[in-house]
Length: 256
Image 1 (tube, rainbow, N blue to C red):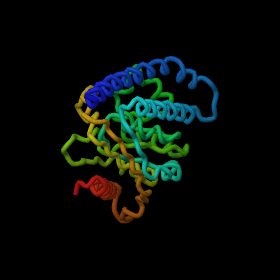
Image 2: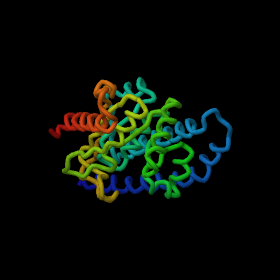
Image 3: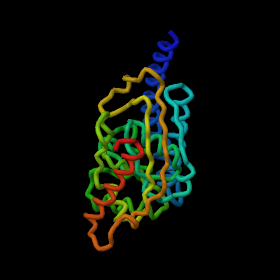
Image 4: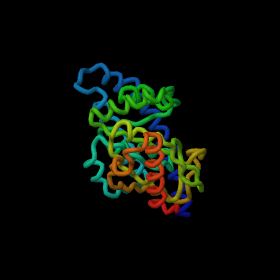
């Protein structure tokens, strides 16, 4: 009986969290973030990124307090020791980016185009200077470089979409190209979810029988210059970096 009560409580609180996320996002898109774009500041985007960080941190705390999920972070100090790095992570669930931004007060990310048309998120994304996925590759790289020049980290999911349960990670070369062209170090973050939830094509109400636990393990900073071969071109080096990163996550997730 207690397990059934816990299940229905988590189902109800999951609905509350989704409603709060959408409703709060719409309210802030119409109030706070338009004001932040108007009020003078030395770096408006960094200020907006900090507010998004605080909001997401509060949201993650709320989800934990309501018993929807639990979160643990291993070696989180590495995030603070590596500002301005390319933060890459596997992508098992819908809220991975929320968890990461909640840990990073000054960060940008590459956002899929559909969110730019989302009334709950579009103005927030614009104010924070997040980068539109699907734009011209040179434009994306230029915006990534501008973000790094300001000292911000950049979150990228090399898979490009959420991992399909039961399938191996299939990483694209976008993250490697950013690391090469912008000459930045890579900070890998391994995300594990037990039991699995909010996966690709899974509706929000399909919650697991027990409370899911999200663990984020921050890896060692990777100097891509140590991986690349000076005599090789960017295309081949990008493949080398992508293969290296894929092997890293295979090892971390015990997928080998």
